[in-house]
Image 1 (spheres, rainbow, N blue to C red):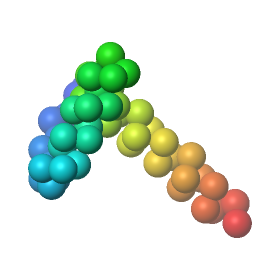
Image 2: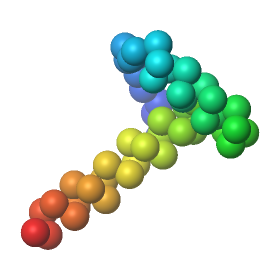
Image 3: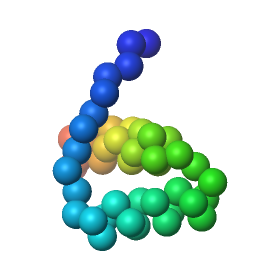
Length: 50
């Protein structure tokens, strides 16, 4: 599947939180963001069932 580059602007405190989480979990920022985005599918599907 082709990849797309995503550039986002976040507060410094949010970036620091992401970095700390990645360091603690041993995961990359890309991996964590991908998981969060994939989690949106469950939320969207859940909303349509209501």
